[in-house]
Structure formats: structure tokens, C-alpha cells
Image (cartoon, rainbow, N blue to C red; front, side, top):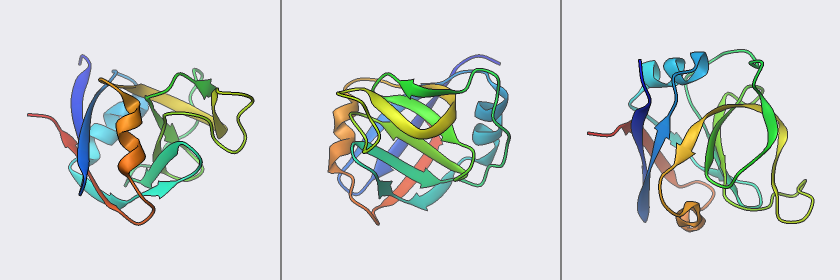
Length: 126
């Protein structure tokens, strides 16, 4: 399997990203398409997905903006695009270590239009 392109959409926009061939990414792709409700935490969007897995050896807590992550404890996809309440300076620091799945294409600040409670849909891009 190679990297797979996904589409994340909400009422006011959409972004595309690429997920790599990792055990957690494969589980996410197997669960698609799925819908969820958005949550925001500083400059991070996260939403639950029907995936359960363990923290992998490559897990990180600080990632570049637009990194598509899987938050194991919250069973959620998390995508930071700027500082969160636990960041030091302008870094993208998540609340815990996360499995890195891939990255968004283009400007991750597109996620700024997402509000708590927005409906989110994730699917393999056509």
C-alpha cells in the first residue's frame, strides 16, 4: 500500500491530505467514509473516528502545522494548525503523544473556519 489521499469536509470548506502507510492509517482508511462532530482546542481541530489502536513507536507530541494525527486516548483524528493551550511559543503541541498519519495539502489555516459542533466528513478522495 502507498500513501492515500483523503478529503475532510465541513459546511464552510474542505481540505485534502495524504495519509501514509502506517498501521493506524490503514485502520482509519478501513473506517472511511465516516462522519463526526468537530471540536477545537486552540489552533487544533479534532474529531472522533471509529478506530481503536495503540500508541506506535513513532508517536510524537510536537508536530508541524497540518500534520494529520491520531489521538489514541480520545480515539480521534487531531490536526493542529497553530499553537494549542499547551504549546510553547508558536509550536503545534498536542495534549499527549499521537500517532502521525500524514499531512494536509496546502494551507492548514483553512481549518480556522471549523467551529465546535460542526459536522465533519472524512472520505478517501476520488
